[in-house]
Image 1 (spheres, helix red, strand yellow):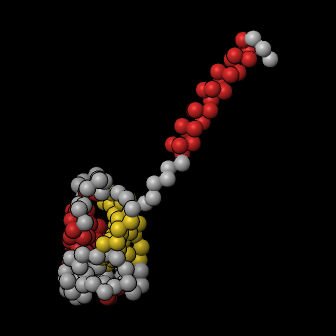
Image 2 (tube, rainbow, N blue to C red):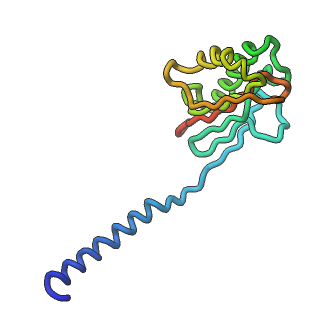
Image 3 (cartoon, rainbow, N blue to C red):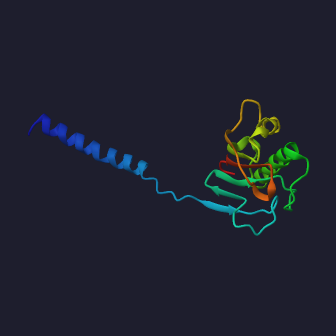
Length: 162
């Protein structure tokens, strides 16, 4: 190989190597996740073998919340409506305690002691989000929720750089 072909091959190699290095550098993101375990006792008293919330970079994971009166292990009386409202208020409180809001929630998992109460729960749940901006959600019937609750909800929120 000599002449223009040799020159062209050298030019391609000289451009290709730096391009490959840049691509490899972009693909090899060596950032380590920043993980924070958060226990504010804003809702639950301390001493449980789980964190109320865990933040991984810009994502906040809330543990399942039930309808306890904040600071106690006492479920509010009044059935599914009262429990649904208190559970969602506890979630709001946990989000606010950790620098987030209901509008930051992107996913919820709902566990109901009686799946036939799904409609009643939904009527309360939807009031906590802007119309048309509901998080992705899973709902299931469960036997034996914590503290004898009728409903338990866990959430994931994206909180950005706060």
